[in-house]
Amino acid sequence: MKCYLDLGAFPQYRKIPASALMDMWMELYKSDEERVHNTHELLLELSSRNLVNLEPKRKDANRDDMEHYDITRVAKRVVQGFITIKRRLIVDIIGNNLPYWWIGLKGPCDFARLLSITTDDTFSSSWFDLQLPAVEVVILNFESQNYTLPLCMERMDQLKALIITNCGYDPAELNNFELLGRLLNLRRIRLEHISIPPLGRILVQMRNLRKISLIMCNMEEAFQNCTNDKCHLLPYLEEISIDNCNFVKFPAGLCDLVCLKKLSISNCHELYELPNRLGRLTNLESLTLHSCLSLGTLPESIGNLSKLEVLDISYCVGMKEWPSQIGELHSLIKLNVRGCVGVTEMPLSFVHLVHLRELVCDEKHYHLFKSCEGLLPSLRITVMKEDINLSWLHRTL
Image (cartoon, rainbow, N blue to C red; front, top):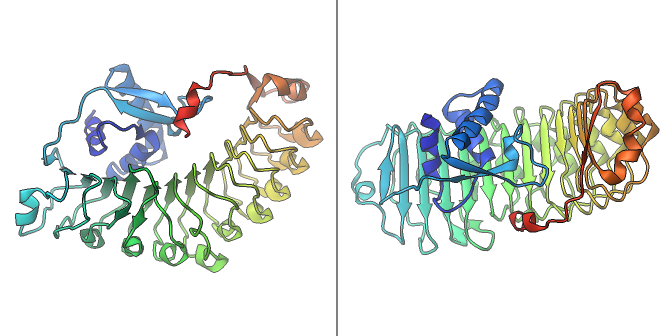
């Protein structure tokens, strides 16, 4: 249960996204795909021991997918200035009062693999130098509207995962955002409540990047210069997750990310269009478009996604139809269409989804799929009853 100590790297009175924990564990403990499943089991075990509470972020969240959960600790975290626990360096800064040991430190602090720094809204981002050559994960929690990344990060040659969370009211500006482009070994980056400048020039320097997560970010300028030639320079990027962002149109340039396996866009209510070039993502295995209220349809090229196993278009209430090419998704195993209230017909090609095992829909649409149960013997249809309880809305506001 040593992983439980890692929860202390997050602010005490805030929920911890399970996906952030898994990003951290994947790098700290050199996890592979099998290990991802084990992290799910670990979180369930922590819950069974009453050490954490698991809270779903979605009404239809399933505990088989912990990424749809937040975590709150039962045990309290007590940090006075800083604490070191088995290669973890956790620092809380109030105002500009840096810990005395930090100011007086002369040489490298080479024991820490995890660095967590939490500051309040009065911190002026005045950093003293710190040498942390062994750090693999950095977690920064702050409340300022303007924030400067610690310059010492530039020398963290082993840094694999970076989690930056702005706990303030408005999206924060990172004054030295370009520093991220110099973290050449970075594999996972998670930005929450940040104003994202144009990413093109920065991304081309991050050749080892595996996953990008953007949550509640201002993305008006983010993908302005993400052209095709720049995307080819991200040869290992496997996952993009965008949640609760002002995201209007998926950039066509990102459709040349040939290694992308998982694309998740959730609660982006202004997203109205996906490019037809989406079909170029031929290695995509999971596509989530949850609660994208303005999205009218799927591109016809979706049939080219021959490796797609999971398609989640739940609560896309503006969607009026599904293209007939959806029947060409011969690898599709799971389909979630709950809450697609505007769709009144099912494409005839649906019966060609011979590997489909799980379909989630609501009572209104069950009649569309009922006839398929005999034609697709492996299919199991889960009918979700209408939920008129709106108490879950506070989690997405």
